[in-house]
Image 1 (cartoon, rainbow, N blue to C red):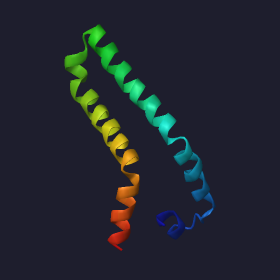
Image 2 (cartoon, rainbow, N blue to C red):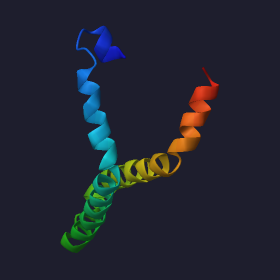
Image 3 (spheres, rainbow, N blue to C red):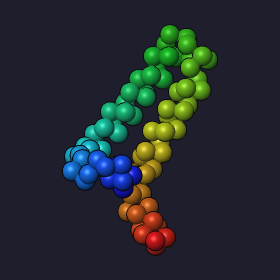
Image 4 (cartoon, helix red, strand yellow):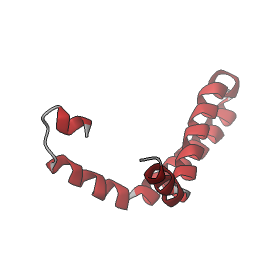
Length: 82
């Protein structure tokens, strides 16, 4: 809606459908990358330096999984709020 108010029209919205179709794959790859990041930082001994950064990425990835699995409930809740 904001993009349409800025004059960008609605044709760009079709991109979201393609992204949503690949969301499981993108999230699985993201999770694998976070796990690899933990392992590499542990092996190199840089875990104390990167600890907060890694916890942040882990939390964001967990939040993304939560939203993905509860998408219908979130949509229903938002619709009832209208």
